[in-house]
Image (cartoon, rainbow, N blue to C red; front, side, top):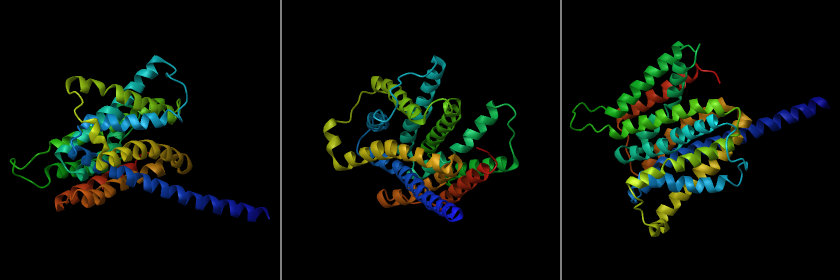
Length: 307
């Protein structure tokens, strides 16, 4: 009898895990689509900083209803690191990513940003004592960097046709997120993920305000009522930023951080499909080669790291 109950519980848990795997898959597909939504908003006339500000305002309003009422961190040192998280994982990360979309394809940005786990590992190696680089990590890094170079140059030799500004901005965005992940380790064990995310949203908004001193808000409020603007902002703010964060925390708790994080490798594939469907972006052969090297390098290097 006990064996039957145990088998039944194990079966239910296994079936339940499949449900959370499905949630994780849906989330990364949504996140892969956010670059396309941002590009649509750019084409509608919104600036890069305006998109980020409007998106995070909506997400912040939602998260305050589920976040602890605690306002400040335990120490001022921790509060400083929260500020740095808000810059690296909020304002600087998203604004540089949005600027990258102005100059290059959403596909390029997605694949380059997908290399951020490598940057996190390399930064950890540089600042963590006793950490060693394994052969797979070195090989994976080399593959990914080669892929990034191919994506940026896109097989073009002539300097006149070369315009790598957007891809370089994507590298800045990838570096910011890699640094954000590294800094997150300092606080992740002492504060809840909801509290940290709320602080990231808050400091992301605050550090974006200086942009409007030098470049005042120009997007007219009446234009927010346009269907394409309203839909994409609601998608970015309520679904991609707020809802997906809450569901991601649930799946991470159920499946584990490593298993859940591996789903991020699917995100660029979602970007390719959505950008082709809505933006008509086409991938060249060299772009496919470069993107394949980036994904292979990240996956290979990930096998050489432990959670």
